[in-house]
Amino acid sequence: MTKQGKISASMMCANPFYLRETLNILEQEHVEYLHQDIMDGKFVPNLGMGLDNIKALRECTNIPFDFHLMVLDPDNIIPLLGLRQNDIVSIHYESTFQVQRTLENARKYGAKVFLAINPATSLYNLEEVVHYIDGINLLTVNPGFAGQKIVQSCFKKAEKLQQFLKEHDRENIEIEVDGNITFENAEKLKKFGANIFVAGTSSIFEKNGVHADTIKQFRNIIL
Image (tube, rainbow, N blue to C red; front, side):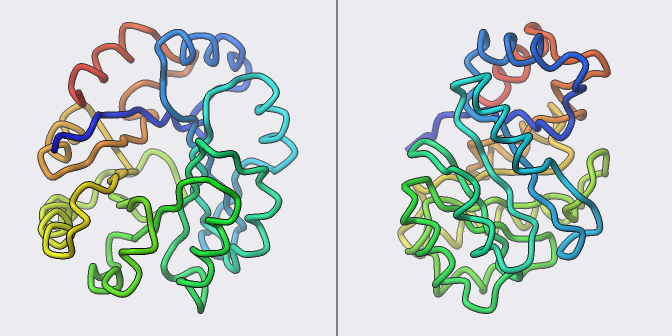
């Protein structure tokens, strides 16, 4: 079964001076998600958008949010996100001692629950939780900063992930890819089952916002 390609626009890459124009274009082009990077300066050495800023952004758009939690003890953050039914929340395997329990806690809020795995995280860690999740967020860079180059081994890892899911009868769950998702890299990863593409400065974002033509070009690649 072919999964529909979707765009998750990385709001970490949005220029705040052009935010209203950016949101207008993202809505006009029917971008499926707004990707929200939540960072605590501990799990990754950076800080992301504050929860108050994210709450304010909710009031400006109806586009569902795609939360990527790069935090220790995500159970403390999940209740504060204001999760909605069409949202996604990605939880890192290494961020909690009880990952299965955290995944189930997140599911109570009605959003889709993804497991995020770093470039060096073994796919074997998925084996015991693959039936508790709606999708996988395959990190193709080490998380925390925009503008990195893709970890080349992630192409082979994406291929292994596709086979792993097939062997566990989960080949139809969603696969999100996040990190240096250029037009070329998106096309390669699509062949391995990726269907949600985090689009940042490598694809749709420029210094003055986004442009409809660029989004159209990117969408043509991931369809």
